[in-house]
Length: 154
Image (cartoon, rainbow, N blue to C red; front, top):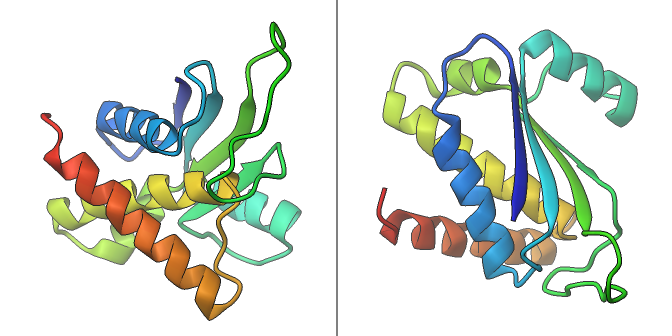
């Protein structure tokens, strides 16, 4: 997997485990090895700008997902042989916002960042939570993927 990681904010994070987590999610969802995705870590002001511009909501938030393809959960799109890699989009996360929400517990902060990476990626892959049934499917898949990630060596 090609997980492009850009850290454009000041909150100190260990981004490499999050990149590996993104790899795991795409692999578990059976996406091709050359699938591309971007994880972008930004400050509160930047995510508030994105939230206003693209989602028409005010203020900062923890995560935004910007899909390039319209995908269905559990379905991998067909590609032309020799065609370009599949770029599924970008997940934008605001670590300072997340830290403020989780308090001083470093473990809770890291767990929440992991959840947001999985959550954002699942949105790119077509999962959603607009109704109770969709939310249950998405939350179950999040927990399955996080449990698998916890069993992997660091």
